[in-house]
Amino acid sequence: MDEATGSADERAVEAHVRRLWRHRGVAVPQPRRGPRRRLDVDAVLDAAVGVADADGLAAVSTRAVAARLGLSAMALYSYVGTKDQLLDLVVDHASALPAWEDPGTSAAADLTAWAERLLALHGRHPWLAERPWAEAPGGPHQQDWLERLLEILERWEVPGGSRAAVVTTLYAVVEAAARTAAAHARTSGADAAAWLARATTTRRLVTDYADRYPRTLALPQHADDWRAAPAAAVRHTVEVLCRGLGLPGCAAPSGAG
Image 1 (tube, rainbow, N blue to C red):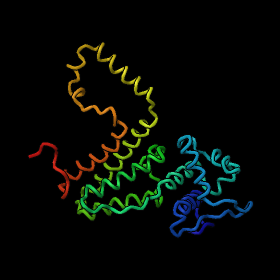
Image 2 (image 1 turned 30 degrees about the vertical axis):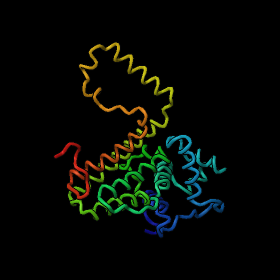
Image 3 (image 1 turned 180 degrees about the horizontal axis):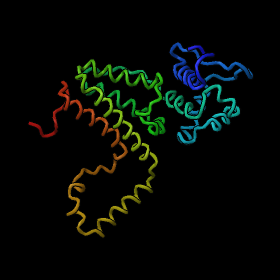
């Protein structure tokens, strides 16, 4: 569609898609009037990532990003469009796929490598979990993650009818683990001590607590490594999925004969 044709809404959508895919052979829209641009889209989005890393995704606005760059909010519009479009752009910009070699030893090893790297990305930018995969902006970086995952599933001959469920499960588990890890990161020693004090007092006052919740109390307690629990949950989920799909190289369930 020519930039001069189509409705205003259609032109806005095309401009947004051009910005998202600017590094994949698609030309970024240029303003027809006004002063010459001092920056490029990447520089604007680097500033937006800085705002999000410091104060969360909710703090990202055209006004906040423009202030970092010494621009007016109106001037920023020609670079990123509306606030919602800015949020789409910053999420995809921060989601660049890192380079790694798949272990290639088993489906579980390759899927674990993928999931751990996505979890690590969320660790660097915890606010990414505020925009779940189901609301992905459709940009190239997030598409790269999906394509890499589907490539792994194809390599290990995961049945086609199961692939969508595996994709949904892994994204959901990684995002949930990322939110938990972010909460752990915000937890201080004083917070942990306060939680332990409440738990101890609860069990003292509720005299039949052990009778009511025996299974809860039977869960292994690892006080020294609770911050590692989210990553461990991701690895365990991969193993469970692989066993359920009957893929080679997956460990048998504990206690299985």
